[in-house]
Length: 85
Image (cartoon, rainbow, N blue to C red; front, side):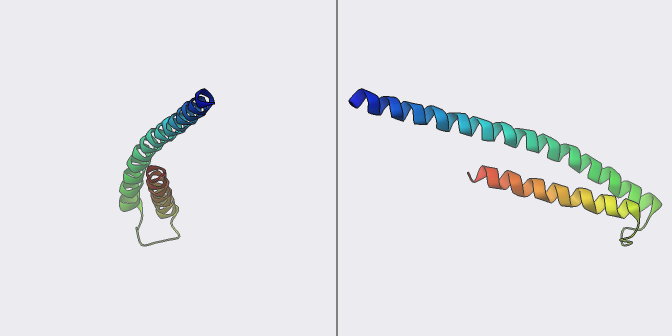
């Protein structure tokens, strides 16, 4: 009986460790994506400043810049959520 209880505990610990590893891997992947998006965001800002007006919400460059910014914020929230698990 005691052996079975220990086996169940070890099994649960292994499962938890596997889940933690998956979460850590996902966080690393998302941070890498976030870094790439921040570079794209900076490039989009440079393009908007050069060819358009940042306050013109109808200009396609401004729309793209804002869209990348929203994706960055969503990724940051997801990373924070994974940290809190």
